[in-house]
Image (tube, rainbow, N blue to C red):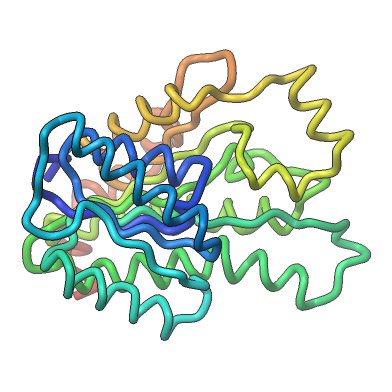
Length: 275
């Protein structure tokens, strides 16, 4: 499966940043969108932008162009209700993008359990839960799942150890689903710093350092890398690293990936293991 007009997508954290950009980009290709966020005003603005994108391509679906759902993704019952509403409105789920995320917010050594636990719950547990729920909806007809990782999936982040741990988990979780089968492809997008609301959790001096010394990945590159994963039917369990000033690269590279050839050669043994 790849992106086609008439499909329906479910995107968490779509009230701004990467989530909103992906929602609008998919809408420009005739995809209907369920927008999840905890900020109603921003989520409803994304819905309006999706409607505008459909109007530009003269796409007039029978069901709404987009709906907004206020959802705290770590709450599994709320997330289940959001998937159910999506199905009630659109009758199909073709694309699921787990994107909602938070940063460490405060130094690990001074943070209470509730603070760092929230990062794991939003950035990792909700991704696993969202992927599991999406698989249940997709297993009859196939689908595409994209988990938003980060360069922190591969590189230790001294000022954000819990964030880095959560994103490393996303990468390994996604890689482990390479042989999922059922016509479902799961991949991960892992950009370096992108100027999004998530940077509000980063101390000002670090934001200034990123901007002045490293720069930010342009959203156009994020979209290009995303569609390379969604449209290429050979992409399964891959993590695309999107640097600021270098070409995108697939992780693991060919040399590292050769360690997993035994699994690929015997892939049928793992196909459908999550049925």
